[in-house]
Amino acid sequence: MNSRARRLAIPLTGLLVIAGVIGATPGANAATPGDVVSSAAAETPGEAIAFWSPERMRKATDATGGLEVSVRGGKVSAAATPDGPGGVVPPIGGEDAKPTRSRHVNLPNSVGRIFFTLPGTDPKNPANWKYCSGSSVQGRYRNLVATSAHCVYDVKRDRFYDNWVFIPSYWDGNQAWEGKNPYGVYPAQWFNAHDDFVVKEDYDFDYAFVNVHSGFTVNWGKSTDGVWKPTVKKVGKLGDNVGGQGFAWNQPVKNRVYSFGYPAGPHPDGDKPFTGRTMKWCYGTTGAMPPAPKYDVQEHTGLGCAFTSGASGGPWLLKYRNSTRTGYLNGVNSVAWDTDKNDRYDTISSPYFNGDTYQVYRVAANRWTD
Image (cartoon, rainbow, N blue to C red; front, side, top):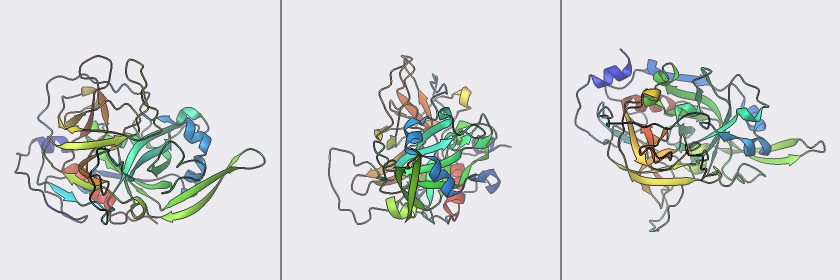
């Protein structure tokens, strides 16, 4: 029996929020360890860092630009429900920050852009240079990035992506180019996803957690032959530099969250209001979404937001605090919806974070990297 069928057969239990820790034991209804797929990155840190020259980063396009992500659903589903007791893992970073009040949203340093290349393709072809969004999240070794599974795994080629790196607090390109990346660039070491996405292409499991190497700042300069040459310097662990968002699972479907990301793709009508060069945010109350058979979606929650592709993988944060710039990861941007059929995206959705999500997170959160 697959994990979805197992969950739907389980009666709904009362919600209990526990101030948990990384090693907390998941509920009996969570996925088994065999449902977690872990795969090592194909490149060394040096190879991944050296691949992303300023020119290649400028030319990278949003990873989902070639997908038809407009979904027009009907009746909402009741499948997005807790499969056991809820729990939370607290965030790190900003503990000494003083409470502040502001009409503006202080953007989280933990959120950034992810760059990668399509596997099994010519890495010199700009058509294969892609990006998504993601966020640092709390883990035992402070080396964890949360994103969408379709931002780590290519379902068309049945392989994890190549040359995968994360750049937190990416802003207008300057942090990635010309040596101005203040928090560093973090290459992938391990990808962790759910088997139901990797094998079945089921977007109810469109989440992933990536263990990254320690970071590097990169100073780029052109040699006499006009070729970009990187000079790198180690800057330490991701969580030490930008903190890490908390993690929450089996929470109420209806919740108020912030969503962050780097949208860049067009709306179905061709309008392209975003560039992907700066972080954007949405805020609102989540709710159950209709099924979307194209993506095997039955258990997504939605948020009113006009994000387009490129925002994929960006975090949904519960109880976000301006002073600390931290909250609790409770979703990731997965699918864009045109619910009123006017050729404009108006809603984004995320897989509901339940015991299965926690199991993938737990495996990743306890994985050491150098």
